[in-house]
Amino acid sequence: MDPTIPIHTVICLVCWSFSLLPLCASSSRHLLPGKPLSAGSTITSNDGTFALGFFSPSSSGTKQYYIGIWYKNIPEDNVVWVANRAMPVTDPSSATLAFTNGSDLALSDTNGQLLWTTNISAAGNSSSEATAGKATLYNNGNFILRSQGIILWQSFDYPTDTLLPGMNFRITHKTHALQQLISWRNPQDPSPGNFTYGAHPDEFLQRFVWNGSTPYRRSPVWNNFLVVGQYIGSIKSTIYFTLQTVDDEVYISFGVPAPSVSSLVLVKMDCSGKMKIRTWNSNVSKWTDLQSEPNQECNKYGYCGPFGYCDNTQPIVTCKCLDGFEPNNKQDWTARRFSQGCHRMEALRCGQGDGFLNMSSMKVPDQFVHVKNRSLDDCIADCTSNCSCTAYAYANMSTKVINGDETRCLLWIGDLIDTEKLMGEGENLYIRVNGFSVL
Ligand SMILES: *[C@@H]1O[C@H](CO)[C@@H](O)[C@H](O)[C@H]1NC(C)=O
Ligand SMILES: *[C@@H]1O[C@H](CO)[C@@H](O)[C@H](O)[C@H]1NC(C)=O
Ligand SMILES: *[C@@H]1O[C@H](CO)[C@@H](O)[C@H](O)[C@H]1NC(C)=O
Ligand SMILES: *[C@@H]1O[C@H](CO)[C@@H](O)[C@H](O)[C@H]1NC(C)=O
Ligand SMILES: *[C@@H]1O[C@H](CO)[C@@H](O)[C@H](O)[C@H]1NC(C)=O
Ligand SMILES: *[C@@H]1O[C@H](CO)[C@@H](O)[C@H](O)[C@H]1NC(C)=O
Ligand SMILES: *[C@@H]1O[C@H](CO)[C@@H](O)[C@H](O)[C@H]1NC(C)=O
Ligand SMILES: *[C@@H]1O[C@H](CO)[C@@H](O)[C@H](O)[C@H]1NC(C)=O
Ligand SMILES: *[C@@H]1O[C@H](CO)[C@@H](O)[C@H](O)[C@H]1NC(C)=O
Ligand SMILES: *[C@@H]1O[C@H](CO)[C@@H](O)[C@H](O)[C@H]1NC(C)=O
Image (cartoon, rainbow, N blue to C red):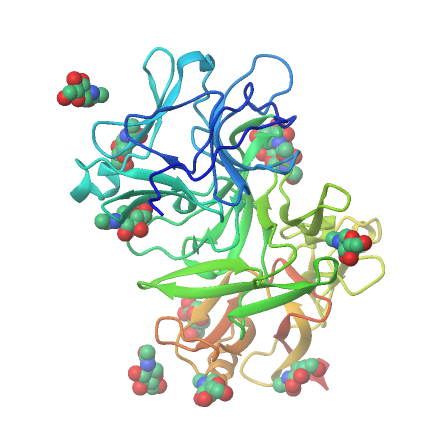
């Protein structure tokens, strides 16, 4: 089949309440040179899952329009990608998304002002610049611009606030910048909001949600498994999260094995600061949050103060002091004000007779030193011999080798912050204490 011929023509009987523009006209899965997309028409993936076109998220007031990709058959909260998130179209009457003379796609408003472009030439994809291409919306939600078969640009490389199955999300940077998910400002406004999700620039082993520039939530540190499967009863399927290297850069991605009843799973940086794993429950026509983090006050970054930890295993999730430590301010602690944290009950003796207490199922603290290429014994020795070392944790990431090093020795110098005890996951954290308190 010649893919340039529109595969099907869909007459929209219902235009969803998310205020998509007037009656949808004909739709193909391609955008072609000389055939601009204007408000009122959409591009639809082959199987009808995704649509691309102009939309307006505000139900009242002055309407602003954006080019986006959304789930065509889901009536609410359905937008997964936005092109011009900070540059809305105010008058959609003759705004268009069209090929430029080169092979870029550009969104221009009624006055001819450029609001958004794929900017391929600037991204170093200039070799095919002069050749007009073709842009196609695929069944997985990826919008791919090709010229002579070569991918020049794809929406999966420019996530907005949502990860879809099969997207690679870059968490190390060699030749490309780190990727981030940035929340919408509010449910009616896709412009960049307060919350950002991504890897720490210097340490791909953990990801953060930041509120502005302040850490708000930190993921557990990757340990021995580079593929993590989480069985979700409500969708009778397992969601896999994997870490993989592509051309020397590390990516995370997630997926649901096909054929799965509900491949309709996404990860979203929500505008209230929660990282959500959501699935669409078609039985009740609602999104179900499989995970929403931070789930409790206690799970917010550093909530329990230095040397405190959030104990998720208790019926009432609350802060505790690490073993060998007690609250700095007992009154505050009793009144559930935890920010001052805890201090050591017995001073360290350093060279002579310190020991390590083993706390299991932990989300290990932030601000570690990641010592490369160390055996377990080396790692213990590194911590023992350095009086400032307050804890260590060790993992052998033998399931896959990242940059030729399968070991993961973490040392902490100074305060232990943002520690948690997890339900049935996590790892062992070895905390340095005065030798007599170990006995
Ligand atoms: C595109 O090319 C045509 C013919 O060469 C020219 O008239 C027009 O100004 C060009 N448009 C842009 C946006 O460069
Ligand atoms: C295209 O990318 C270059 C380099 O990143 C940037 O300087 C320029 O402003 C971009 N142009 C547009 C129209 O976005
Ligand atoms: C152009 O960029 C895309 C991703 O944006 C990349 O996958 C592709 O390899 C690049 N193509 C060339 C010819 O550099
Ligand atoms: C994010 O930070 C701002 C101040 O920068 C604060 O007003 C707001 O409450 C914070 N949001 C959350 C969810 O903590
Ligand atoms: C975003 O930050 C601003 C101040 O920086 C604050 O007023 C607002 O409440 C914050 N919004 C959320 C959802 O935290
Ligand atoms: C939807 O309903 C069917 C039939 O009652 C049931 O088997 C399925 O588990 C339900 N799916 C969800 C996600 O609740
Ligand atoms: C630490 O505790 C865990 C769980 O009880 C155990 O599996 C592990 O072997 C302990 N570590 C050491 C060094 O004893
Ligand atoms: C790891 O350390 C060993 C010796 O301890 C050394 O022979 C080896 O080259 C190191 N590997 C890397 C990748 O640094
Ligand atoms: C890591 O585990 C693998 C498999 O169990 C083993 O072959 C390898 O020697 C271990 N590496 C270290 C540094 O302990
Ligand atoms: C202890 O370890 C830290 C971090 O690796 C290092 O900066 C410091 O110099 C070490 N101290 C000693 C006495 O080795």
